[in-house]
Length: 121
Image (cartoon, rainbow, N blue to C red; front, top):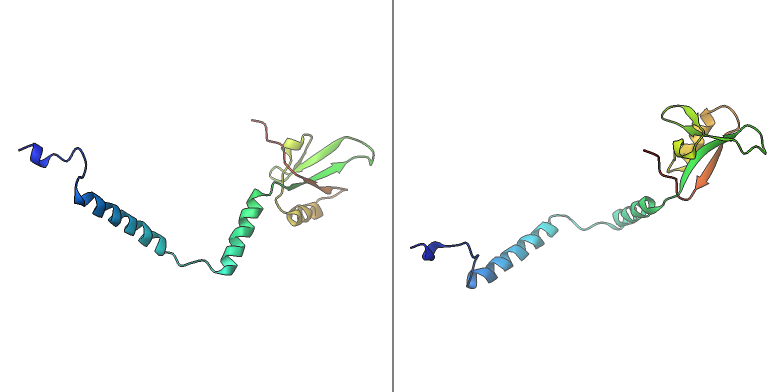
């Protein structure tokens, strides 16, 4: 009696092919649930992907004297000037960095950096 109802070895025979077709149809139905993207949506998605891959960042720097190499970097979250570049706040947008710089006193400048350093842990 056990051999007749033993399903431990999986499905055999003609049912296996129909099961594959059923799974393929379900996958296609899942894809068809969403309408195709419009041209504007595709452009926006491509722009967001390019933007996420862009490693350019901006930070705010100040110097005490024009030829002095002693620099301080602004940290927005703590509202302090850090001595190390890793302690600076890196902005994705130049306009955002310039807006913050406009709120600060002194001779701060916005600097572009291609790849920001990693923060120490």
